[in-house]
Image 1 (tube, rainbow, N blue to C red):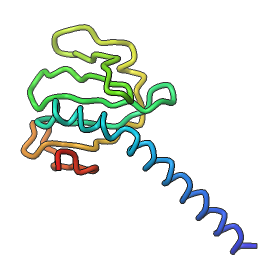
Image 2 (tube, helix red, strand yellow):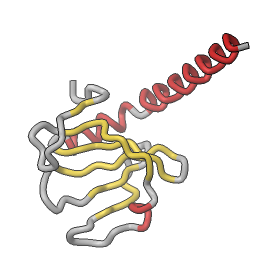
Image 3 (cartoon, one colour):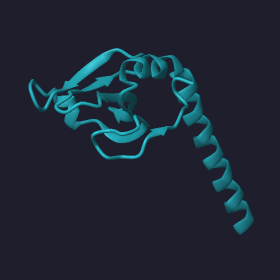
Image 4 (spheres, one colour):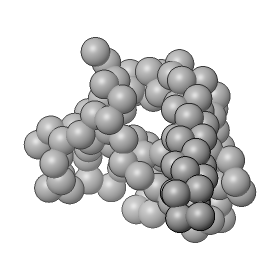
Length: 118
């Protein structure tokens, strides 16, 4: 019984990993497009109303954060310093940084999870 349970857990984990990688492969063009704009900044993958979205900002002080849909179209502007903050900015969840430029203003380690720009 314990063995069957462990096998079931392994299958569920495998299927969930496969669906994640499929989402990334389908959105590779979007990630490449965002990288071209934000290669001197940061890009995160997030969820908004159950959909995959991307959050990106430049490596400069007071830079707005822009939210993009899975196709790379801007759908929200989070300009806390100088402009209006769209309501969706507070509703985006589960953000994980997938790209961070080296020597950034946030003092975080450089990362490039999907080898963007290579």
